[in-house]
Each structure stands twice: as structure tokens, then as C-alpha cells.
Length: 270
Image 1 (cartoon, one colour):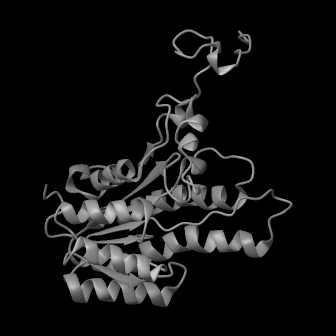
Image 2 (spheres, helix red, strand yellow; image 1 turned 90 degrees about the vertical axis):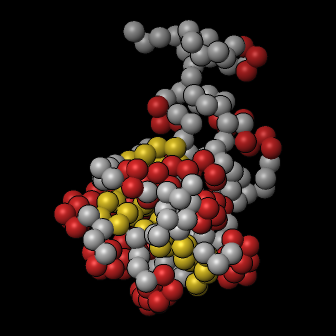
Image 3 (cartoon, one colour; image 1 turned 180 degrees about the vertical axis):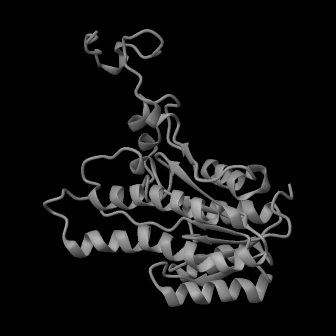
């Protein structure tokens, strides 16, 4: 406990899911947490349930004026800004042919532009206090991709590059910038209908054969926000149950998966 004592951290997309889990964990670790979102009723309710160390502010991450207001609120309330988690994101699955420019840009504006504006908005107050930590939430779909994710994957790949640029430019000011790449997470985005089968079935061929949970992502983000990660910047941390490591092939040695899955591994190409 107390790994964030005395720190003020802004978390976007904090009204539910991963952002809510991060806000709750950070507060428990001693931080004052400014929670930003556009889901006002939910965000206010979460902040009230956390207590005096949390405050909610309406924050459309694609709006420069909303960012200016959020940072101003954090400074007036907490006196400083030590951390930022760019967590807010949306997804609009569709084939490339069925993706309109408006739909594509709506994802880019929240996921990519929102991350850019967030980093740009907090750098001055972080420099003023001698440093800070920014964690940008990308995705495994920012390392690889899937069909139907043209806008989402583009935005998450962009976050990887933006993170590294910011790490290079701001390291000398004591500001660390890293990205986290969740796999499937049991949130409204990752399991919109709260189907128990979706917690395991799509993940049966990954190393840890289940979906991830918001508290597991929050724990990884806490590490990077905290001083425990004082020599880590420009890094990519996958929190994905081994998804990007590869795929277990049934029937091959060490898979632990047999014909009960109704799948026969293809012959080796070697």
C-alpha cells in the first residue's frame, strides 16, 4: 500500500471497466485520482464511491478545451499532475469496405488523437514538478491485427509509435512514457453481453486459457505509473495471457490439448 502516496493521477475512460479498476486501485495506493469520461452519471457515482481521493470531470478526450479544463481541475484540486493513463477508447468493427470515413475518424479521434492531446496537455505540469509517468493503453491489436478492425488497429498501432516518440523527447525531464497492450478483457468492450462462454472459449488456444479481468490490467498499469518502474520508458507491456506469444496447437507435444476440442493439428512444415 502507498505506492502512489502524494501523487495526482489523471485516468481517462474511468467511469467503468479498466479505467474504473485503475482509479480504484490508484486511490487505494494513496493517489488522488482525477477521473475523466463522458459517462457523467456513472463517473460521478464511481468517484463518490471511492471517496475524497477521487474526483470526476467530464472529459471528451478529442477536445482540447476539455483537456485544458481537466488539467486545470487537477492542479486546483491536487496541486500537481504526476501521472496520466490514456485509457479511453472506442471500437467500431467493420470490414474495410463497410467502414465509412466518419466511422473511421470517430475511432481515430478518441483513441489516437485523445492520447496525443492527453500527453501534450500534461507535459508542462509534469516538467514543473520534475517528472511523471504516462501510460498509454494500446492493445494486442496494436501489435498484430484482426479482420474487421481497420480503424481500431490503426489507432492502437499509432499509440505504440507515439509512446516511443514521447519517451525519447521527455526522458530528460524525468517523464516516463510506456504502453500497455491488453488482450481480451472482461469489460463491456471485450464481453459486451457478459457471456460466461466468452470468458474461456475464444482463449482456449492461448497460454493462459481465459479472458483477462480489469484488475489485472490495472495492476500492470500501477507498476508503470509507480516509482517501481523508474528506469522503464518507451516500453511495451503485453497483458494478454500469452496471446501474442503464439498459439497452442492441439496434438503437438506440450499443448495439453487433445481431441476433446475436435481439432487436429496440421502436419509440421519442417
